[in-house]
Length: 396
Image (tube, rainbow, N blue to C red; front, side, top):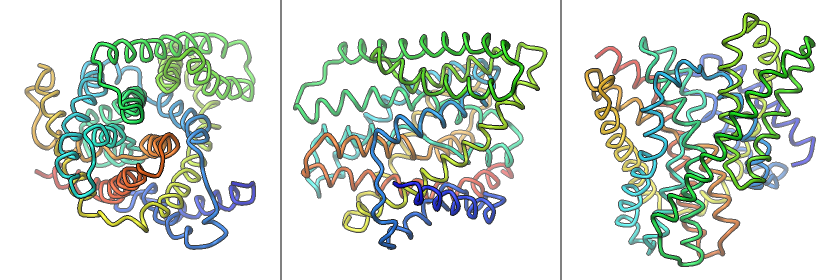
């Protein structure tokens, strides 16, 4: 993308946000993706490409840090057990169940079990974006939106580890070694979390050094991106490091008597940066998706996988919530249904799909197109349906 194209996309994003004020029945992400898909038919925009490195190192750190920084440390502490299980064991179970279903349904494209599990791992990370704000507006109980938001931040990191292991199996035809996977998973995850917590704590102390708002904002930008690359340099999860840093900074600010002043300073920047990054990203997702979707001929298969992705997520969520006494008495089909439907596939899934396309030859193109089709259906149907579904269930 050149600078002119970026400015045009930002302008389109601004217009879309201005038109889509309520963002309920037609939330902003799906609005932007639809516009981006339409732009792909214009030669000037059809040449736009985005690399997995650009998404992973430029867009994701900023978006993850913003989400983590705005996430309440008290909410994380309250739902830590549920969020932890859903984003680790729950994510693995979801991938296995969905992988088996994908393998069974994928006979029409002769998909291997390793390929099916790889596609399933791509579809496990959730990206609620505006769904969280919709849930907060439509539900009296904040627990659902807090769990959805917290889970999405953590499972972004764990899904990358799972995808990396399965991609190695797929490309090098290696056997799955459980304990090797567990060891790598713990090393990458714990290393990233510890790095992020340490960096977030240091920044929370350094932010008091200067009273200038510009300096405080600059420090937050530095930590959002530097901790990501620092963790990646050590072989840890940059995603989990950025999330941990944002949460630690938020928790430390909650303890200071001048929390409001600090948050006003940081919000002045990040509340502008976040929609700018999201506007460009979702418009570009719409543009690059067209290359894969227009020639895709297996929409019935994609629809089946999409439906079963919701069912497997529902099963895992229902089972997880039943495990904990604090949720067992209150859990019902309504909460589990909302949590399942709110698990929209988005940014991280697109990054993983681009990684798959980059690491394999043309023989895997059908898997990439299949993944794009399911993500597109998820963005469209789940985003549009979340508000009416939440209101309907709330009435019941």
